[in-house]
Image (tube, rainbow, N blue to C red; front, side):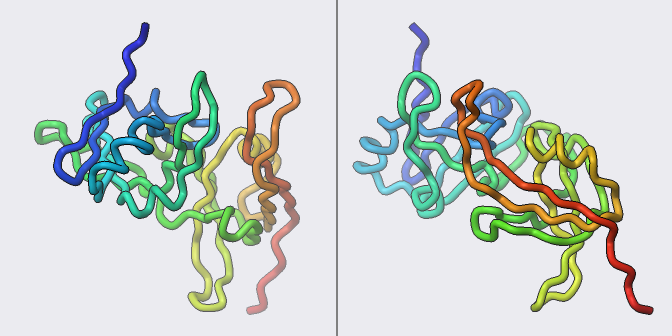
Length: 205
């Protein structure tokens, strides 16, 4: 029987050693915490921070407890229910490798479709191999009422990567997030989008 990796608590920090690439459910970009930890340990001990240590890649990821408790969702993905949360909220807490530090691609500001389901702008770049899962990153130039013109990042997934193959850099796009839907083939949930594109309007000189 496979031994469950519960992690441990050191003072006010919950610590769990993981292989980040294997622990994350990349289809949904989520990481899980065992129900025993959430419903037993976190009730007994005043936890301030959650720290995930990736020994394989020499990286530490952290998230405040007050943040994760607002966003996690209890659901059954594998054999048992666990608490899942988006890895978009994780921050790198340090590098463990001796002297050598890997230079990661800058992700910059990314769009939160759960907070704002619709995004419209001009596609300015498509970047490959971004982040720990070598994901696609789509750079979109948008007009903000408060900040003027700025560039925002959109993480790729199975749905978006397929749609963006038909979009050329320089075209205007509109992305509409439809929420989570269930695949009739696999019976698993995925993040669904409608994607529209057209030639970008000419700017007045």
